[in-house]
Each structure stands twice: as C-alpha cells, then as structure tokens.
Length: 232
Image 1 (spheres, one colour):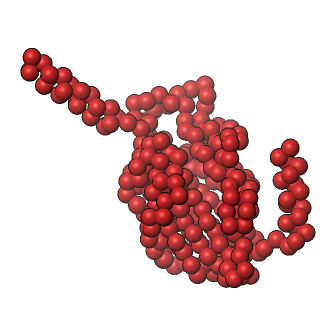
Image 2 (cartoon, helix red, strand yellow):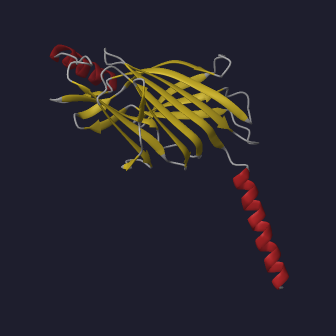
Image 3 (cartoon, helix red, strand yellow):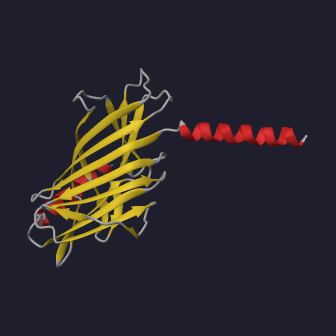
C-alpha cells in the first residue's frame, strides 16, 4: 500500500516536471524606444517566443491605449508599421479594441506553428508625453504585465533628446519595485533575467520644458473633439 502511494507521488511529480519543462515561454524580449522632439515615439519590440511542442497560430500582444494619469484621461494613438520575423518576412496581424487595450492578433488563423519564432513589432505612438509645469515626462509600460508566460531575458533601451531624469520599475502591474536604468552614450538601458508570468517593466524619462513639443490650445481642443467623435 505504501509503495503504491509513493509510486503515485513520483508519477505526479514527474508529470508536473515534464509539463513545466515543456511549457511555453518568451526566451528573449527586447524593446527599443526612440522619443522624438515632435512628441512622437517610435518603438520596436523583438520577441523570441518559444511555443515548445504546442501548436499555435501565433501570439497576442495587448497594448493599453486608454488609461488615467496625472493629467486625467489619456488615449494613446498607435500606428503599427509592421510585424515581421527575423528574416524580414511579414506576419499577418489583425488589430482590434478589447476594453482599454489595443489587441494585435499576430499569425495565420489557417495554419499552426510550434518551436521558437521571432516577432518584430514596429509601431509609433502619439499622445504619450505627460506635460507638467516644470518638466515633461514619458511614462511607459515597456513590457506589459499581462503576459501569461515567463520571460527568460528582458531588455529595454530608451533614448531621446535632453533626457535628464529616469526611473524604472519591475514586477506585477502597478509595482514600485525599482530596477536600474544605466546610461551609455545617451541610451538608457535595463536588462533583467527571469520575469514571472504577469510581470513587466515600466520606464520613465523626464525632459526640461521646451525639449519635446507641446500641442497648443487649439490643437488640444481639436484632439479632444476628435476623440469624442471617434468614441461614438
């Protein structure tokens, strides 16, 4: 009787270990951020996703486009320029709004894949700069905390004109656990090993007033009206 119990425990342990060893994961996640004087931000995400033996169509990338911050309601405008593999071949992708997120469904719905695949996502965002009285700021969830799989290696690189203040946070959503952004030739970088599921990286860059163009009152009013029209 005792031997049967021990045997069952061993079997359960082995099965659990096998499932963990063959689970999906992101092997490498690199985010390159370029902040421009005109307040646009160019972002490239390089994701090496390991599906292991699972048969999938591709990945989903959720990017928040509507949220609240110090200035009130924010609505980010995304322009997805391309989604490619490491050879420069285009992936199929479909954009849709799900709640407060822009969802990118990447992959061919009529075919399945497995193993390791590169996804290189290039996009531009507008309305992502926070304007304050003494200083302006870019606050960005570079690697969102909504991935259901672990990330073995995560790197964020950020550069822009006149950056004079930086901060970095890691962990689950709204975490204030600090991480270190190191400066090299005008680029601020952070690299971390092993993010658990639902953990991410947030970076902050500050600028003196006047470095990043701020919309005038007419432009702000027109932008507000446009968003109201589009939300109806």
